[in-house]
Image 1 (cartoon, rainbow, N blue to C red):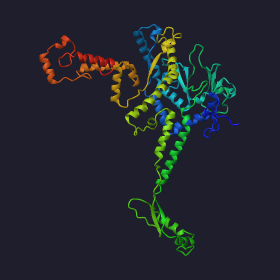
Image 2: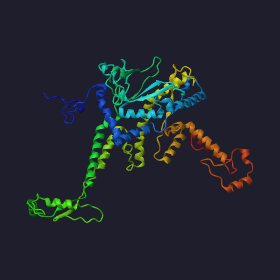
Image 3: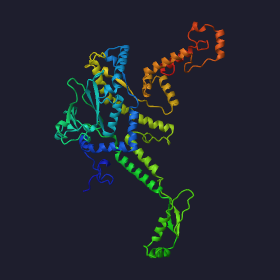
Image 4: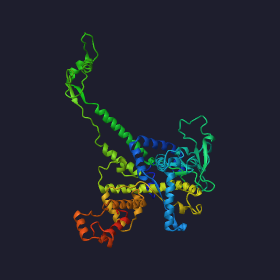
Amino acid sequence: MTALSPAHAAASYTDPALSDWYPSTGSADSDLLPELGVIRPRARDLERNNGYGSGASQTYKDNIVGHQLRLNSNPDGVLLGWDRPRVKQWALLTNAQFATWAHDPNEIDAARSMSLLGLTIQGLGGWFSNGDAIAIPHWLPRDGSRWNTRIQVIEADRLATPPWLEARADIRGGVQIDQYGAPVGYWVRKSHPGDWYYMHPMADTPQDWRFIPAFSRWGRRRVIHLHDRERAGANRSKPILSAIMREFRMATHYTRTELQATIANSLIAAFIESAMDQETVASLFSSGVDQNGQPVAPGQYWKNAINEYRPTLKSGAVIPLPIGAKLSSFTPGRPNAQFDQFMRSTLHHIGAGLNIPYELLSKDFSRTNYSSARAALLEAWRFFQGRRRWLIDYWLNPIYELWLEEAFNAAVIEAPGFYTNGYAYRRCRWIMAGRGWVDPSKEADAVQKRMAAQVSTLEQECAEQGLDWREVLLQQAEERELREELGLPQPNSTPPSPAGVAGNQSDQGDSEDQTGEGDGTGNVSDAGQDQNADNANMGWAA
């Protein structure tokens, strides 16, 4: 009886292309946790020793976070019953107070080494190479410090299941969960398992581990665990390099082999060949005597001649050759003409696995026009924006919540009903590095059109460029005032001509004082005033 074909070709066991394909059917933790200890060090090695791996890591850090990180508090006035002026006043005070903690390594970092920006970049790098990042908040009072909340970032290797608890089903990769999969606590080593300076014979004893509850009795977060839950039930995540690790490794080996072959070929300048026929060569290798009449081994004459002359290729050199020899040039087969095309094809595949275009991965824009570059960068920016929101939700907002609770309890800021209406107070935006422009002229025109059509706001446009819209307006007002004091024309205005000024001084007199602000020539410039007002509202030069 003939077996029926499967309804889906993907389920076929007889198709030659699928017959030997038997992937794992385990759960998220069963598939990952036994192999994570192998994947993680390989990913770190790629980031350390592979140029593209290291570059991809830096590209993530530059585009997801970048060179700045600032809080823009925006409490929910509707939920709090506040009017707009009170919301604004509270936000400005909170931003200023938070900066005294977040931008001072002595305040925020338990190790007194980095600011919030540095800790965030370190956490993002840990997620890239390890699969997840862990931060432990501490309450550490210090002399001379305004705040007591400190953040300690630890490497993912320290979060692990103690050996004597590996049989427990509720502890997965060091994360202890309840019946719903929610974390109850975390088992953390007191040192890195690969720290050779800390290893001792009593390793892996209960004294070397610490159990940290996920939350305090009143709900304060005790551990911040940044990771991707790609599958339901996953308690740890894998490095993003894992999907393209094989291609990375093979490309690295291929590049090294090609480089070695090219260097080896470059060391060969020419060959010395014999011009004698076979009979002469046979007689040469049959027998012979040296200058003292002693017999020599076959072919010793040639060896002696080559060792004596040792021809060296250099400019203007005359090379003596043994009798019956000629010099033949060497044409190397390296560099391989197909090497560049093959590597670009491989890097396209690696870039797809990393969710970034080839141009960003290779830093090669030589084959790209404006339209293609913009399309590629927009696609990458969508990915970076998604990762940025993920980083905000699971890393930055929890850190902000820790500080905000301390600020409230220290009466630094007023937050009535903080524990019952925390979301309203915690609502905020984060300002990170801007997207940048491929063609500033074209994109600036697009910004003006979006704002003129009222489909965008100054806050949105400034945020895309890593700017605070309030600071932009305040700076514009200050520059406008200083320009007026110095008698300089405002941007988008026409400087007065000497003839116009002289004529208007004699003809118009005090017309400016009678009708309003003039345009610098004695004529009233209502249209100019309207334009300047529009520019101020749009955030452009005013």
